Length: 99
Image (cartoon, rainbow, N blue to C red; front, top):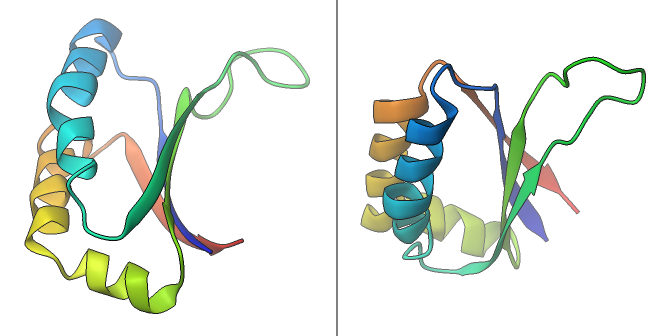
């Protein structure tokens, strides 16, 4: 399994961020071909106390590398990528991992 992880720093306006994320971004992500599952993890703390480095981590699951590659090349993914850069460019770190 291949996962695209999106690690989000806490935005200044959390309510506006979450409204856009839930109402605009997630519907775009769900249209990406080959997406097997999307998981949203919200941080509740850090092990040693204090604020965690990220407030949310999103996981987009794909069956294998060819499925992932095709998904990343799709117009649906380009739309989701354009959207994320419009509202979270300075807040998000993306990485690809293998399960």
